Image 1: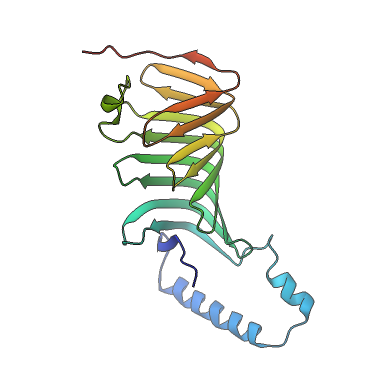
Image 2: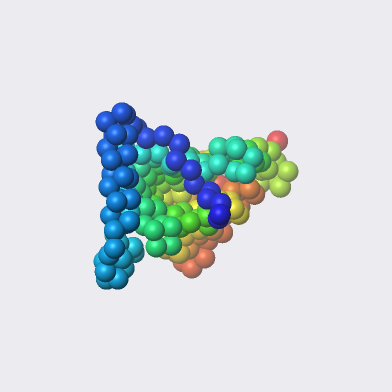
Length: 209
C-alpha cells in the first residue's frame, strides 16, 4: 500500500451526530458500489472535477515515518479529489517545523496539495512568515536573524527541500528591509532569499559588533 504523508488529526466540528451521519453515508456508498452500474455511471463517479468528500472547518496534519508531527493545516473548507489524490483548502492556515528548528507559518485564501509530494500551492492574499534555523545567520555571516515575511498572490512551499518559491511578484519584509521582485526563491534552512526579474526596494544591513 502506498504510504500517505497526510493523516487526519481532528475536526473542529466533530461529534456523535456527524460520526453517525458519516457511518450511514459510508454504508450507503457501499450498497451503491456493490450494485451493478453502467460504465458511464462508473466514469462519472470518479470525475476529477467532483470531490469524493468535503469537510468544513477541518484540520489535517502531516506526520513523518517516526510519528512526529511536521505540519498542521486548518481550513474553512477542505475538498478531496480521488483523481491524483488532490486536496483543495479554502481559507488556509498552515504551521510547519523543520528538523533543524526552522519554522514557517502561512495564510492564504486557497491552498492545494497533491498526494505525497509535500508541495503545497498557495494562492490569493498569501502571507508567509519564515523563521531561520537557530544560529544559521551567525554561522554564515548573515546580517539579520529576524523573521522573513513574504507577501504575494501565489507561492509554493516544498516540505522536502524547505524551499518557498514564487513565479510572480513577491515582496519580502525583514527588520527594516523591503525588497520586491518578479520571482522569488527562499531557502528556509539557510535563510537566503533570491529575487529575479525587476527587483526594487531597500535592504538595511545590521551593524556587526
